[in-house]
Length: 252
Image (spheres, rainbow, N blue to C red):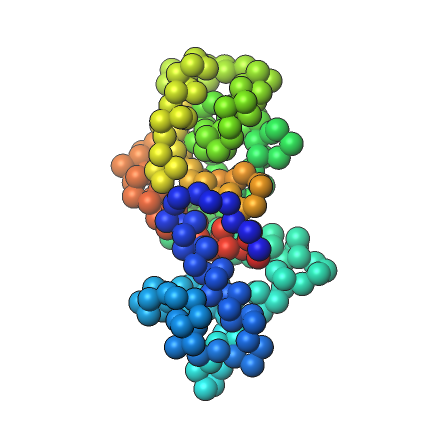
């Protein structure tokens, strides 16, 4: 189990939840919350919140006598066989919940072999996905997804990507200067969601937050029709709060 050190609230939540889960897993006969607090060093209020999240996600269960044991979701993700399918199903379930919570289409994207890839999406009749009118792989400079992923690369990684993908003007708001884009990526705090205010497509606004586990660069994103732009920042904050379960699933 590994998480990269990103100084974000979801990272710290996932890191603490992972510590709790690892402690529970070491006690096959069950462990009390009092013992968990002693072994993890977490405050009671913090531990209670993490246990609530772990139970909701199916990673731990509580026995009749109140002790905690690992749950079915943890067993599926930690199994030697079928982990990839189990992870995909677990992530999709989490995305569906996030879609309903934030009232927007939600995406998981990864930076794989030098390219931006949207690997999973949760959409619906009331929360339509953004129309991919330009391939996401060639529009990283314009999308929240792309800028979040590029922001997690080092300087050379960004330069390499931009050298392979021309920064085309997709809307009047698109940044087409490599110098300006690099400067904004450098200045953007990792704790603040990256926004796309009609830079990729007229009529759509987006937000993205990092979800990097291990050496794999990724992000969690949402999109809204521009008429709902007034909800974007609040939705982005809720997306950020919901990133911890996604990070945890990727780390197990």
